[in-house]
Figure 1 (tube, chains in turn purple, brown):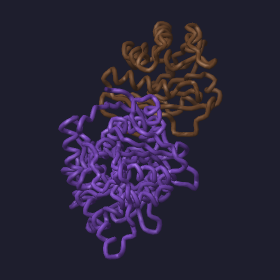
Figure 2 (cartoon, chains in turn cyan, yellow):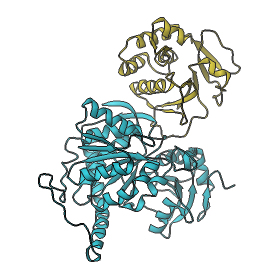
Figure 3 (spheres, chains in turn purple, red):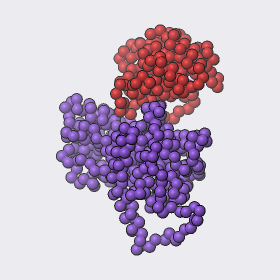
Figure 4 (spheres, chains in turn red, orange):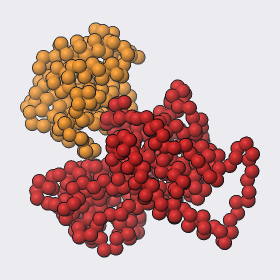
Length: 369
Length: 175
């Protein structure tokens, strides 16, 4: 069915189609319309799920963990400070190998109080063991949320997945949305280590130094398996529903001398900048990275990379730039810090970043002269 | 690319007008995006919303700076807001007003959307509804087709007075 929807409504519609048994959420600021819409679906009977309103995001994640460990599909959504408040339990969800899916509307962190788009909330959860993806359109938010359940619940993965969408720029913008019936695209969840609710029993969870590292290595093995599972999920999605996605959305990269690398909506707008520059004879291309963890393979050899960072590691550098630099030490990178706190960045600005690039340097848009 | 900025007051339905316009454009087999201005929105405060319409997929997320068309749902906003800011040379302003409005260097169209809403008793919580009749005016201007305007309205509202108001606006607007 074709409709008009915001990014928030698209995620909610995808969650409805994925049929989780439990949705737990803190319903107040900085929560989004995602759970408001899901609550309406549950109230109206369109969704047969247990909706648990809780007193904090920490509890929302804990409730999802409790539900998931019994082997049922669970979902939550949050944003900015709400995600940070979950931090402890994010580690727990990943460590317990629970395939929880969460939508995070990327918004800046205070102070100053700011509700606009930034990626610092997600970046600060980078090392929790969650698979992280950033989406760029309303349709992609819908499609990727469906994929997220399939990927999280894959027996070779069993890790939680965070679907990130830019606050306001994508969460509140209306675009066309084609909803679909996923059928058996997401197979029933089988959690091998689930608690048997008919015969509940728990064992001491103290794990000594002789075993603990094995669990950590298990998480990393799952992360290393995830890319092939993600590729299968994307291929199967294309085969069934006709829309193709990859770990990286490449635009005019084949012959490009300079490639702009970004996440989310900035990466979509970057394609307009590429079109502008191509008309000027500059061989530009765009790579919009979708899967941030596990980090995808990039074709960086022999080209300049202009990396747009919407989040910063203070005392070090742009978080996306640093990921690329540490994976590809020989990469030629111009790091552009832009779009913090919803700072307006247009395709003209992005074209300027590319034209004026100074390889090996860092540039703060709006600050550096 | 055709870019539209809608000026209204919080609660007057400017965002819904943007949504209806996007839906009608989809029904016309075009691409569209609609967005509220990302700010603190309060009932009664001046707000803006944006619509882009194009034959190609729209990849621009940054805000509209030079609109082709500006819609003013509440004429009193013009006392405090420069509604013409950034308008394209030769751009058009559609103003909800019972009287002609004279503005320099732009094409001005006026239509009494409030009067139309009141004439068919399209009033909710004491306020006339402006976002459905404006679609009739936009159909008359050729921004969307009449059929898609009505289909978009019927897709969102069951009250046929919305369609009647759009029809009245279509007939009344002189372009």
